[in-house]
Structures are given as C-alpha cells and as structure tokens.
Image (cartoon, rainbow, N blue to C red; front, top):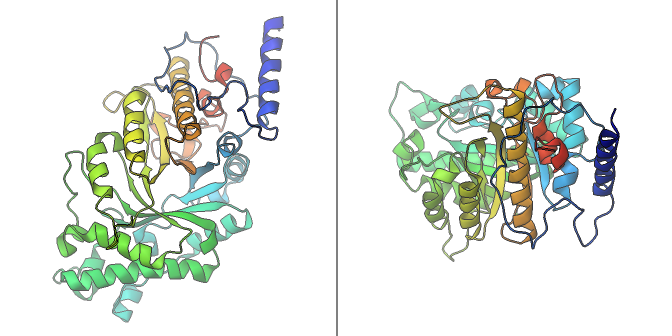
Length: 402
C-alpha cells in the first residue's frame, strides 16, 4: 500500500478517536461550528472509484449526534427486533426507536373488543409488547408513531356500532371516540411500565396536501376541520408533560407556508401551544435542493417549536428518475448525507433550530420500504456505505474527491 494511504487511514483514526473524547468548548476539527457559514448543497459528483472498505471507526451515529444533545433514532420492525445483525447495528449506532408499524392505529385498535365494549378499545398485541420490553431492557428512548392518521386506520371506528354496513357516526360520537382512543393509548403505555421511555409522540400524521388543502379522510368527514385541533387538545390533556406532541408530515418542503399557518392554530384558550414540535419525515432524494430544504427548516423553527427529522432516508436521483446504485451515484448520496447533517449541526450550534432527535427510517437497504432506491446507510449486505460516513461527518470516506 502506498504511503499516502497509510497517512489517510491514520488521519481518519485520529479524527475518530478525537470525536469520542470528552466534549470541550470547541467542536473537534472537521465539524461545523456555530460561526461557520451555513451550507447545504451537495458537492459535485466525484469521479468513480472503489467503494470504501469497511473501516473500524469507534465513533458511531449516536456519538456524532449526541455531542449536540440529539438522540439518534431508527425505525424498528418486528423482524428487526428478532434479527441478530439488525440488533447489533441498532445498539451500536442508535439510542432512540420508532416502531415502523406496531403502534399505528390498525395494530392497536381491537375490533371485537370495541364491539363488545361499545367504545373504542386500544390493546397492544404480543409483537408490540415484545418490542416495548426490548426497548426498556436496552435503555432505548422512544417516539410514538402514530395516533390520528388517514391511513392504516380501520374504517370501522367511524361507523355506528363499529359496523361499516351502517351509517357514519355523528360529530359528537366521533369526538368522544377520539378522546377515548387518545386517552387509552397513554393508559396502555402506563400499564406496560414503558411510558417513561417516550419523549415524543406523533399525534397527527399527514393531514395536509401540497396544494394547501386538508386531506379528505373519515376524521374530517365525521368531525370537521377542527378534528386536528381536538386531536392535540386531547393529547395535551392525557399525555405526561415530558412527552412532546408532534405533527408529522412528508414533502414538508412543499408545505412550508401551510404548516406555518397551521401550527399557529394549535393553541389553547390562553394562547399557549398544544403542539411541541413538527416532524419532518425527510424522505429525500439526492437531486433535491438542500438550500430549499433548509429554508423550510429555518422558517418553521421560527415558530418556536421543536424540529425533528422523523423518517430520514435519501433515495438516489429524483422522484421521477430513480438512479441505479452505481459507485458514482452512491458517492453523491454520501455527499448529500454529509451536507444535510452538517447543515443541521450548524443550525443547532447557532441556536437556529431546537432539535433533540433525528430518526432514520431504518439503516439497511435490505429492510427499507424503498429498498430498490438504496436510501439508507448500510447496503443490503449490512456493509457501511458512503452515506454512513457522511452522517459520521468523515468527509474522506463520504464520497468526496480526494
């Protein structure tokens, strides 16, 4: 091996070891500082070279984010919770968990029990309980996902006697059912002994369209446009104070003005916010404009609520033009992740945004909901990609030109 390669490897290891040292008043070399110019655009596509060889670097995702007080999260499926390699990567890199599906409405609402009780019944199934116990045993913080949503919500909750062959219930009945539903979510968590793991909960998910209109759904049809206000009102009533209440959405960069106006409506009779934060799902593409994305982040942060990336993944190319996972395209992805995380850390350092968690929607392309678009930090063989080193802020391994 040529001498310069030894020198590069030595420099990377020295950087990594320094990153793990106790925090001092100045960030380690190579990381953004509060006084640095805020940037975001990915660099030019580098000339194709070999993908980086797995490198033993002691710093992990949770270390890089943790130095700014940001939890490092991943979603978890039941399969991940039973897969040895998945659990190994999770424990090494993350300290926050969001269940991918196991706490969505269709996973926790019990149809037969609701019919018998004459009221909505929330019940956690065995998979959900098993995953909650794993999180508790492994000291994982948790984001709840999600309560009020147009999708993966059984239609029967909106009908008389929970029977879809009958009529939709009245506004008053549906408001009572919503309150019961939200109250029981937090009661069930308390019963499991896992409530204190939770620091945030997505109260409402994906209620707005890109054209600024409210999404049509049965919540809207039965209650009316103020169903969103009531969802946060009931959540604020029953959730413990230490659980932040979030509105969560995708294509947030195309809904900036809509969300800015919406959040300001979520106040109580004294003018205090019922909402604590906005969740950016951050399902991005390597050809997206980071300048525009950060503009959305900056504007919504000015509302005084927390900002959290809740489902981050970065697909290759663009929505209409998905690109193949060539070495050159994976390098561009590494650069994009590097610049995205760098821009976020700069904003945290400059107190421009209040962010205490950043969640990736998985970690391996093998288990991604967009597997064919190669959006995550590890490839399908669980090997680190340029994207992983981009998140670690190790520029030399993140796909930039040498």
